[in-house]
Image 1 (cartoon, one colour):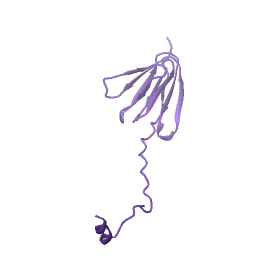
Image 2 (cartoon, helix red, strand yellow; image 1 turned 90 degrees about the vertical axis):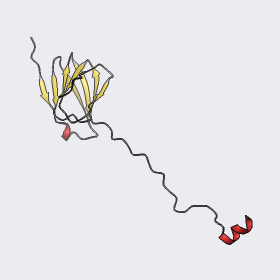
Image 3 (cartoon, helix red, strand yellow; image 1 turned 180 degrees about the vertical axis):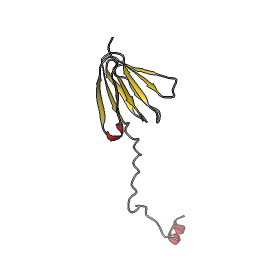
Length: 118
């Protein structure tokens, strides 16, 4: 019987623009204490993800991605030798506001002049 490897990672020091690429042996576990809005991607193998206080578990296979919904602990368990990528999602970009020109090119006629042409 093989022993289960358990690692706890703190992603606060990683930052929002970085990603961790982790190789996991079969039956290895990774605990993420605060997995708020993290993207977990399965690159190789298969992993099982369970979240504290959630009745739904997720199994990811290569190419599949799961984004954690909120502030809770997540445990990732390798069903077979696997490789995962863990990253914070890219913040939704605000749509660029259309820059208004410094002046508007609308010829305006004096009120008296426009009344003549009406």
